[in-house]
Image (cartoon, rainbow, N blue to C red; front, side, top):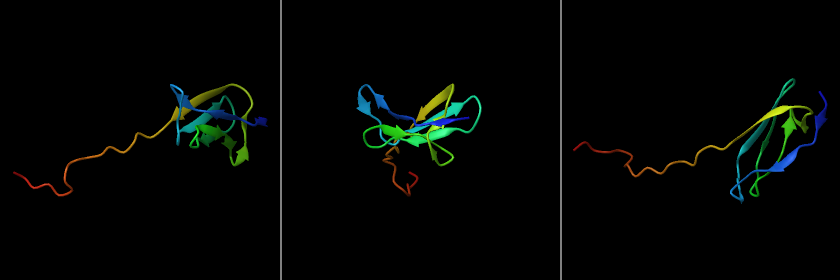
Length: 79
């Protein structure tokens, strides 16, 4: 399928989301992927080429959860 340039911005309640993965899954052909920058902007690439397959795509946006802080000591002693 033909490849077209795809750019965008990911926000939640107006706030830019940094480090999110944006994936486009076309009906046929390879998936396109991009990662958001500090301002939430992304550009998709497909197999190293700029753009995404033209046509209907399912879109997925995900971001790993922030590392949880743990107050438990590294080597707890049983009581």
